[in-house]
Length: 61
Image (cartoon, rainbow, N blue to C red; front, top):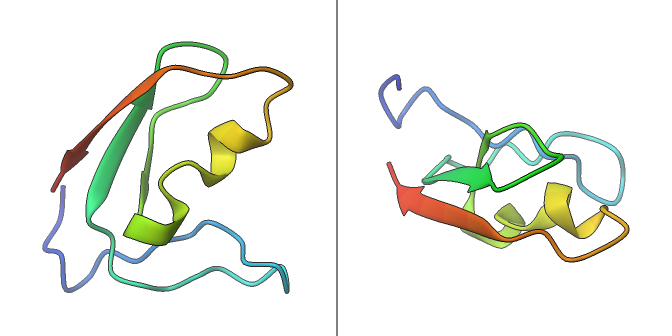
């Protein structure tokens, strides 16, 4: 991982633009979704788009 001051959350907001908040979590879904980094408010955003619940682990970075 790079320095937290240079990492930003790239999860799209409702407007479609990337969030750009500081990235603080590394998220590892157990299936069907690639690992990603996200700010606190977007930790589950990519896995919530799945058709069923996706177990995951998240660790602060």
